[in-house]
Length: 100
Image (cartoon, rainbow, N blue to C red; front, side):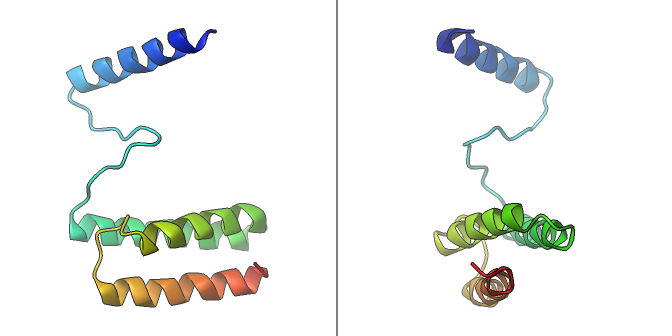
């Protein structure tokens, strides 16, 4: 399928979803979160990476953790400085455990 058709299909899919009133994030789109939602999202992201690690998927867990760490450092999560500091330490500890 040519790229133009793929893009058109994605745009059409978005229009249908918006018309139904659904709020679904799409890849590569930043969704603004409230501080509470963002903190919850951060926690869920870290817990998911931990689950992946415990399940034996250390490569995938490391990728997720590096992504979360980068997003955390760049203000991608709407959280306070103390949360950034503490969760950065948690993530770095998990990465040390993996050996990355």
